Image (cartoon, rainbow, N blue to C red):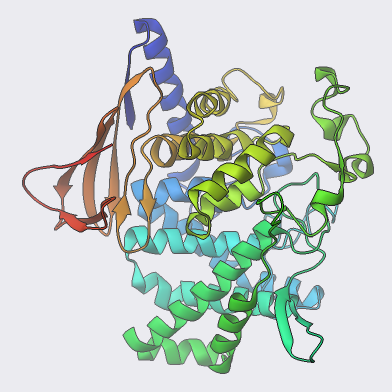
Length: 468
């Protein structure tokens, strides 16, 4: 549960609480009995998308489970692990090494009908690894890493190393590492070079795989030897992954001081916003894709999503400048968009905008804001609601070593309360306008990083108060 207190009129406060619980109920209904079959885009509510699975589950649903129901999160990751052989076949079909997870699937085979906006989204590999990392950080389940997770890391890193290439310098030496002709999360800009989101996530995937496999070699040599035999892993590959990650090209425009969505995005013609009536949205139903692809217009967050998932790469000022550039040109035609825009709006100080985006994601299905709830509930958006509450309004960050918090509640709210599980410990979180209070419910203790650089343990006894 997530409980809120507000200064709103009683009936409005009660309606807000009920809407939050409705979204949480959808998450519970969709994930409590998956039997390692994954979670479809419409969960178990209707037949939209023909029951297919997307990367939505790893980015929007699994983080909720990692902190509230780790056994369910483990099942979803085992679903992806069991599809590795199909992902290996797909990588070979695409002339790449390793494994390449499909954008849209049921049985591991790519089911996208349009390659440009679907199949070209290679970033699915990194989404699976990001979810794996989030689960391992929250659970400490090194047994899963040894028996299933490490194999996913090896094969996904191999794909990135195979897909990208080093640009040659004028002196003949190798320069930056590039990834060309891919599509990022934004389906209104397709088949581009050096998509910023894809390159950032690929870099994370490569580094995390190399570091974690080295950890496995020291922590469990027997499991590591089995991994080497099963995947025919050459230890030199780990160094190659690190080298590619270190040389990864991340687009940046010095003049505007923003990260371009890809190498040519800033060269595109701006979209005619004033000349586009509301009846023409969503754009993909009213304009030919080629028209959309020629313009600076986004269906959903791309660089903004990268700033959420790879937050340490960006300074707060970079986040603010990127957000201020991309937010006005994002249509929100995708249900995956509003929740992430809300999280970043809260972080960079756009409080009223964060409140507005939260309302959009909270009521997406309850008020049928996209006009397609009859096809099923947008389960990823439900996960996004939880993320806005926890990561957006209370600023939760899990560095892998410790948690940190930064309260930034909406102006009309007096409190948010929820419970987290981390490494078998349960902690109650209570945030208000002046800070966050943490109280250990069970377990030995949870490490927390404070703004002054200190790391403390929330253990049995007095709660920890973190001022705003």
